[in-house]
Length: 121
Image 1: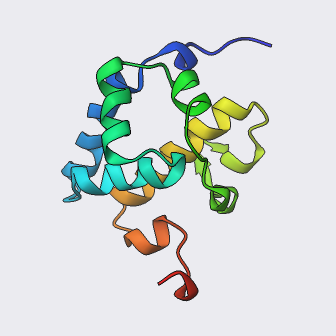
Image 2: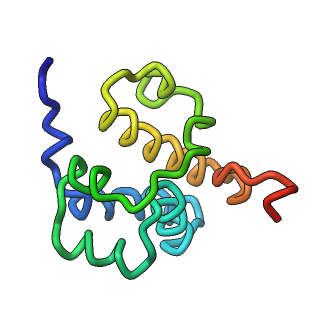
């Protein structure tokens, strides 16, 4: 199978694009960070560390403290590809993240983005 270039791309190099997409639609850095922390289990401090260290997407997800089990509820398309149909695990995690950032930019409430139910509150 072909290794995708995005696997070796640093999260820090793409992070400003996530921020710009969110901020252009009136959302905040705190919300982008909350999504990343929810998805991966990183704390805000360890997320910042990963960004400073310029870890690759592959390492970022491999080193994640606890991938959120609720991420399997993320469905829909990113760039015309259904996220739930992506077979390669690292690419699926990247697509989940892309989908969550898209939802943020579209104005979806954070509780829905983070797949929270009334029982979670």
